[in-house]
Image (cartoon, rainbow, N blue to C red; front, side, top):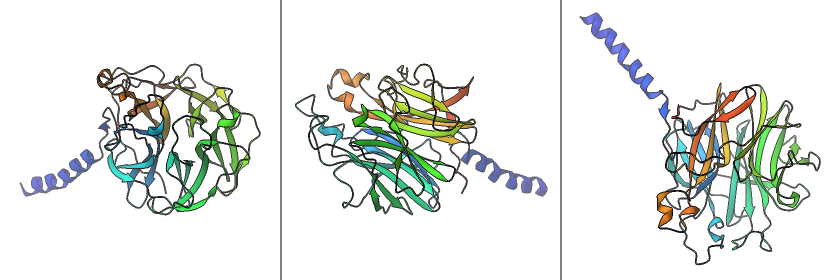
Length: 337
C-alpha cells in the first residue's frame, strides 16, 4: 500500500504539470481592448525575463462617437496598448506603453518588436498630431526606433531615414549577419518596399522597386517550412508572397482571410497581422472590424471597433492556407535563448 501511495504521489504532480502545459482552445475573440475596444496592428514578442508573451498593439479610440462619419480622429491620438499571456491564447490587458516624448508624439501606430542580443528593438509609426482626414496637410508619418532591456522602459534610438516621405508599418527580420525592413511607402502609391541594415540603426533602401505591384500595408516577414514569407494587408484580404532569398517574391494566388468567418466577432476580413512561428506550426494574429455584428444595426459607429483573432497557417503544396472557422488548440512555447 505504501508503495502504491508513493507512486501516486509521484504521478499526481506529473498529471498537473501536463495539464498546465496542455494546448488550450483559442477563444473568439482572442482579445478585446477593455478601454477603447479598438485593438489592431499587433506585434507579439516573448518577454525573456518575465517568461510571458507580450502583445503590443495600436489602441484605436473606437468608442468615440463623432458627429461627422468621415472624421478619422478616432484612429489618431492613439497609444500603444499592451497585453500579456502565458500561452499565447489567453491575454490580459496591461495598460499602455510609456515612450519618451522626445522622439514620439500623440499618435502612435503599428509597433514591430525584435529581440536581439539582450535588447528589444521596437520600430514605431509616429504621426505628428491628431488629424480629421486621411492625408491632411502636416500628417506625414515617420518610423522611430526605440530600444529596451525589459519591454517597459524605452529609449530613443533615432528615426529611420529612407530618403522618402511618409513611411509606416515596419516589419524587421534578421537575415544572415544583417537585417531587412519591409515597410509601406505612402509616396510609392502605398506599396511595400524594403531596406537593409547591418546595425539596426542605419538603413539603405533595396532599390526603388516594390516587392509586389499590389497596393498594401502592414507587412509581416518570417521564415517557415524552409521558405521566406511576406504577408501584407491589401484591404480585400491578405496577400501571401514566398521567396527563397527574401528578395525575389512569388505571389500566391488569391488572398487569405479575405472571406468573413462564420463565428461572431470574426465576420469581416482579417487585417494587418503578426505571425508567430512555433516549431513546425505557425499562428497568424490579425484584427477584424465589427461592422457585421448584431450591435452594428443599432450603433452606426460599431464598425470602428476591432478585435484580435488567431488562426493557424498551414503549409500545403507550397502554399499557406488558413481555416479561420476551425477550432484551434495550441500553446506557444518559449523561443530558444
